[in-house]
Structure formats: structure tokens, C-alpha cells
Amino acid sequence: MVSCLVQKDGQEATLLRARVSIGGYYFLLFAAVAFTHPFFPVFLRERGFSYGQVGAVLSVFSLAGAVASIVLGWRSDQARRRRRYILGTMLVGAAGYLLFPYVYAFGVALLLAAVIGACVMSSQAVMMALVVDLFRHRGTAGSFGQLRVFGTIGYLLVLLVLVLWRDTPLLEPSRMFFSVAALLALSALMVLLAPENPEEIEESARLTVNEVLYLLRRRDIVLYILAHFCFVGALMTATANLSLYLQWMGATRSFISLAYMTSALFEMPFMVLMGRLSDRIGRTRVLAIAFIALPVRLLLLTVFRAPVPVLLTQTMHGLTFSIITAVSMAFVADRVEPRLRASGQGLLMAAASLASATMPLVAGLIADGWGLPALYGTLLALSLVGAAIFFSLARQTAPAEARGNLVAPTGGQA
Image 1 (tube, rainbow, N blue to C red):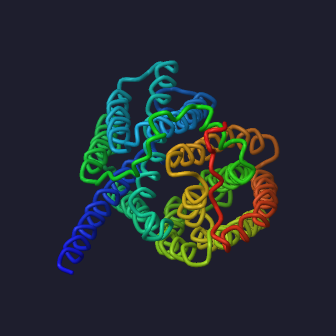
Image 2: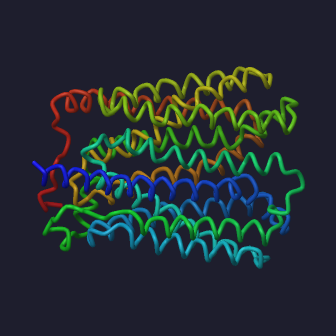
């Protein structure tokens, strides 16, 4: 009796340490993103890069992340270790940002963007696998939502400081990139606090690339990756161009900031609530809400022509971004063998990175040729394609979730 209580207390202490470590990782990571997301393109423009060159740098960042997420996920599964890969990639990414104030050549910017993108994006794929390792018996999506929400808090706090502190010296290039590097380095060090307790699987050391590629021959995995690509491409492109859309409507900068803060405020509670809901009623049902809500949100953005109605659509961020972030990783984790866990998350992150790399280029061409309303109409069509793919898959996954029959083992036959 006493030994059971001691063991239970030890498990709770381990999980508490994991929550502090992983929550701190996301808080610091997205605090750094609050600098780079709005102001990195501005920095590149001030260095004399054209709009096309800025788009190329951002695309290379995401493309490198797509490739690295797959490769590093496989290596992490093969080694059955997570922390060393997260720590190493984040420290290299931090070092890369320290060099950016000295970049003036386009080729050097592309090289650094590739290195940083590969490191930062792949670390997140492995981190998601670590979350599944540690919380697979505690409600995967709900636990991930509770941890990932700290990223939103970090992002909001830094953004709030930058908005309220007018003419802040933190946005001077050398100080900005030092701040980003310091935050990434601290996030890497936070990972050292996390326990690492992967399952003992003898076959992991013999995990081959062909067995990882087997996932791409799984109908359920492939269809969901395609649906995820369409969803993320439509949502993130719509969000990235929202400031330009509001500016086109005559909105002030403070109103634009309010629009982004509104989405973040609705993102936080829904990240936790929708994750927990999917643990109770199944991933497919909750994801269905997102795949219905996104076309509705984009339809409203297509027809609205005034800032205030557009601001109201930002309240739907919790039904779109929060669900796809918290539940997608659990949807994939439920369907892959434990030894392929990071590889599955790598494929998911690769799809998101590829969407982030390609869609901004397409969006720029559409906006230049036909205007911003046409861009949102195109994104609506893309979201409908993603919804059609998802609901064709849902006819298979919903009954499987009800039966608890989710994983199709590879059996080493890839």
C-alpha cells in the first residue's frame, strides 16, 4: 500500500516536472516568434531585399523545416531519444539568429534561413513526440493543449510589450536577434528538465527509412496529411495577409493589432477545451468542427468589406487554429506505432511547413493579379478541398475510433 502511494507520488512529480519543462519550452519559443513573425520581414526589407527575395527567404525557412522534420523524426525514433535532438537543434537555431544582424547578401540570408528553419521546425516535431511519450495515458490532446497554450501566452506578452513600449530599442536589429537567440537558448535548456521515458522497443535501433516511408502508403495517414496541408495552407495564409486586408479596408495600426490579439485571446481557452473534448469523444468529431468552421470563416472574410465584421471573424480562431494545433498531433499519434511516433509527427510538421512555404508565393501572385478579396476566395476553395478530403477519411476513422482500432502495424514489411 505504502509502496503504491510512493510510486504514485513519484509519477505525479515526474509529470509535474514535464509540464514545467515543456510549458516553459513553448512559452520561450513563441515569445521569440513574437519578434520574428511580424518584424523579420521588415528587417529583410530594410536590408534592401525585394519583396520577392523576402518571400524566398521565408519559403526556404519553411521548406528546410519540412525536410528536417521528417529526417529528425526518423532519427529520434531510431535512437529512442528526444531531448538531445530538441536541445541541439534549438541551440543551433539560436546561434543562427545571432548572425543575422551581419547579413547583407541574399545568398547568406537563404543559407541561414535554411539552417534556422530546419532546426526550429524539426525541434517542434520531436517535442510533440515527447509529449505523447509522457502523456499518452493522461489524455494526449488535452495534455498537449494545456502545454501548448503557454506558447500563446508568451507570444501575447511579448507582443503586448512591443505595442505598449513605443519606439522600443528591442526592435533594433542586433538587440532583436540577440533577444530571439536568448529566448531560443533558454527554451532549449528548459528541455533538460523534462523526463525521458520512451518505451523499450528492441526494433527501434533497426528502424529503416523504408519503414518510415511505409507511413506514406497508409491511406489514413496520407489522406489526413493532405487535408492538413490544405487546412494549414488556407488558414495561415489568410492570417498572414489579414493585416494587409484590414489596411486595404482603411483600418488603423492599433485596430490591426487588436485583430491579432483577439484571435490569440480566443485561441488560449479553446486549445485546452478542444484537446480535452477530443480525448473524450474522439479526434475525428472534434476535427470535423474545424474543417467546417474554416470554410465558414473564410467565406465571411471573402464577403466582408469593413474592419469591424472582419474583427469578429477572429473570434473563430479557437474553432480553427486551436483545434488543428491541439488535435492533429493526437490524431496522428493514435495511428502510428510507438517506435514511429516522432516520424509521424515529423510528417505532420512537414505538411504544415510545406504549406507555409508554398502558399505565400501563390497568395502573392493572386493578390497582385486580382486583389485581396480574390485571394480569400481562393483560400476558401482550398479549405473546401481539405474538408472534402477529411470527410472522405472520417467515414473510416470515426468508426475505428469508436472501436478503439486505430494503429495499423508496419510489421517490418515496408
